[in-house]
Length: 106
Image 1 (cartoon, helix red, strand yellow):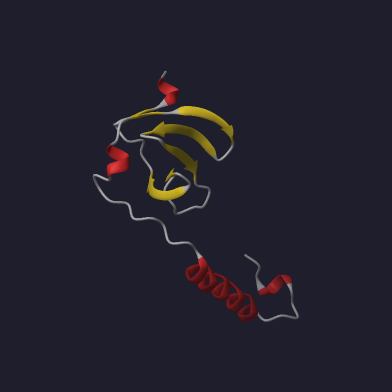
Image 2: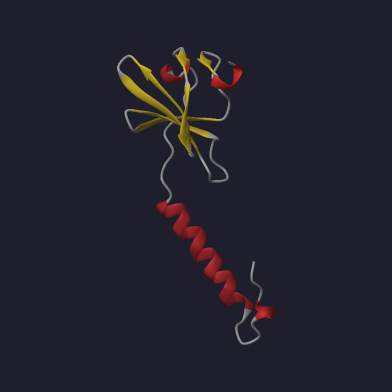
């Protein structure tokens, strides 16, 4: 964090106000995560995943005619993964569900 002593002409309060404004803007404009419900039907459905070559979407699967994808989240404070079904975000989670077959275990 920048401190006032790096810029002697600017008071320290100036930098504090900028930091507060950034935090306020983040609270207002950050996307709301989808609800994470225990026993979520998507997370309880048996799925066999396959690897992809897309960096932030390492796994895909076809389930009942729908395209499922696991995305890696890169923001601190968010769950590790987001599940999308037909390009719609449906769940976020940290731990790989027991009903899913992890492609790394093949």
